[in-house]
Image (cartoon, rainbow, N blue to C red; front, side, top):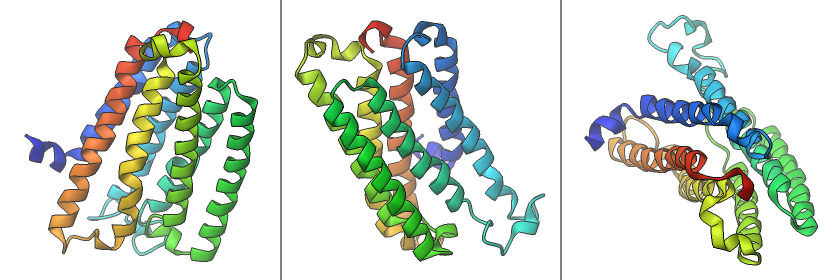
Length: 234
């Protein structure tokens, strides 16, 4: 069963992403007066960028985008670096600024976000055109640092307030757990990117299984969080 899911992991990801987004849209009325509505918008955004990012599969095997074969746009690393690795990090930094109360925490996140964007732009410029062919390690590390700060500040506020009594009713708790696990698991993989080729089948299978578990956990957690959370606690 696990081998089957791994083999069709791309389809599994898209189904789970779509499930989370649809769940959010169905429950949108429940969250429309809270900051959680922005997270629902983000889930829809993910579905769109993942769908458009599949263009790379139509470049190979005489697909209708085969004219991109041999060009810098042949692979979709650049697409997900911009719209997920950078775009997703920017969203979470902004979103946690919305749900945090501490002015100091918000200020730290703002400064960290500016530094993250500077690092990302510089890495793209100085490693060009590597940007189109593989993931960027410094971008991944900087992204992880942002996520760690977001989650740390959120849990710190929860622990220091009465919200700890009902932490499981806040959507922020589920979002924090999901993104922390995903970034902690996926970030180290970028340093082994050069092993990701068809000649090293063992590593490819291992990487696919790790991603399957981490990504599935994230979207299932989002979906469950949207269902069980109560708007008053956000």
